[in-house]
Image 1 (cartoon, one colour):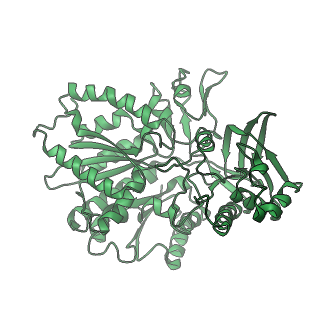
Image 2 (tube, rainbow, N blue to C red):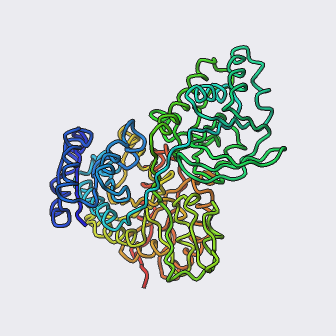
Image 3 (cartoon, rainbow, N blue to C red):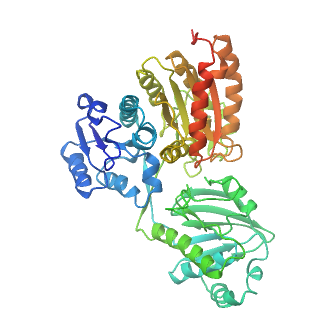
Length: 536
């Protein structure tokens, strides 16, 4: 598998902290192409990558520089990855090695440690790129129809905009629907336009009872006093991000992130105020009830425009980032069925486990629950995670303690990135011997990986995951807790102090807390006796 390794100096942000030459020394033995650019977002750099994919017949690419989160949260950041995909790469083999946010920006006081850590993370990313299975892409003709949840001022304005652009609209409200907004003098004309439009449909006293699908093609069932009805829409627009009922029901079927007040939030309020972690679900930015109508109209416009930009594409491609079943091992025990919070697993007439790709969210909880190892997850396969642990274990920490950190993709990893903001603000750093591994969910953490980490000589294992009630996959934390509580007994039986295993709940923007908790982990490890112990 020809691999291309590209390193970005991130416009000089790595210089003086990470010795790039040392970090990639010898990498040409495993990579067909190795290049260093000043910045990946330089058009000339991107053109060089595109030519390499063709000339060297590259099958995988590692982008060493920004975090993977940077490409989803920065404006137009996805454009680079999309160009590489359009050039022929499978998206599961375009891997980011985070040597900026979680290395250079947080370890400026330790260039030697930063370089060693950067090298290890590049090696881990290369391993991930070469072991990653090709994922299937399903092309969809985006449906020009939208389900709007909430007949609010913002919901009605968004409905008007979408109808004017030729979209069909379903407006669902938990209460009286149009009657709740028609008394507003500023909204009378809008309500009249929407209510009289042939492409508009209203469902009052509605509840969202089922849902599946992805951007361009969702199936949503609404239950109302008049009965239940299923709608096929291209996207959803949540006009009431502070409505607990809508949020609870959405989270039963789709990934929806919530803030500390329980309100639905976007992936980044600064750069993507309307887009959520599910690319086909938009949220109207939070506005106070007393705000001027101009701000509400602006909020509605931003959500409607963000959705239209996605649904106006001639095709949308959903890459099936799901759990896979090895039918030669599956015994049909249904452990996966009991574990999956989204109803994506079932036992077929053949007695084997099957995956509903329209419902699977790729969290990996079913993989961990399988007693015979018949399942694996394409975004973090088992062989890769074992290999990553062993690769990071080889990092030379000059005799200091070494901790592996499993960071969940929902909250833990973004918090690790946000730690760079705290460090840059002068709030202190943490040791470069904290070595991160991204996992899709806390529920993906197999006890085997913890045991392997201690076996390989790590002094501590830390898991950063979503707060209770905030898990993107609903019950990933609960599933994990059950396993970890049993594991602690196993650790003690092997003479490993179970205090070396720390579970930390965190939210995506708690960078300062991330730094504090990592430092506390190292402090606590130092208080243990010198006998580290390890699986025998």
